[in-house]
Image 1: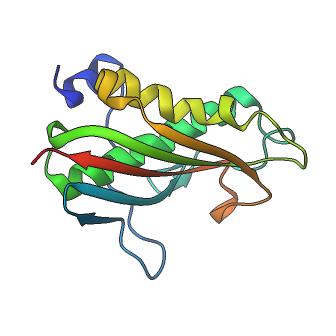
Image 2 (image 1 turned 180 degrees about the horizontal axis):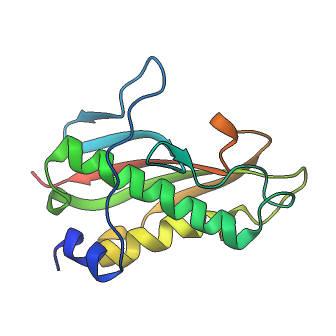
Length: 153
């Protein structure tokens, strides 16, 4: 199934591709690999989730935050590749969780992004991953996701 049709089936839509917030570009392609800069949970100019998991946010709301980060990443992939149909596979996801000291459930939070990639791309959405708790993220975001994608030749 077409990835964008699958998004619609899930009741989701791609946001406008988020602009770079500094001295970098949203994506860099080298060969068939597309490196995607980190995206936060910003939709329509508004932060959807701010604060730390374990304080202002729960694992469940953090999971939703990671899903929104993944949607932003998909918007950047589409902008760079022209279509999500050009994705051969999601290769690697780095997930960062703004969390209280000692927080040990980062994987459960970043599953929000990972699960979305699998729902959209099936087996091609399965990827290697890191999920790390940190003490702060840009704009107070609850999560940030970076992705490496293989594009079809």
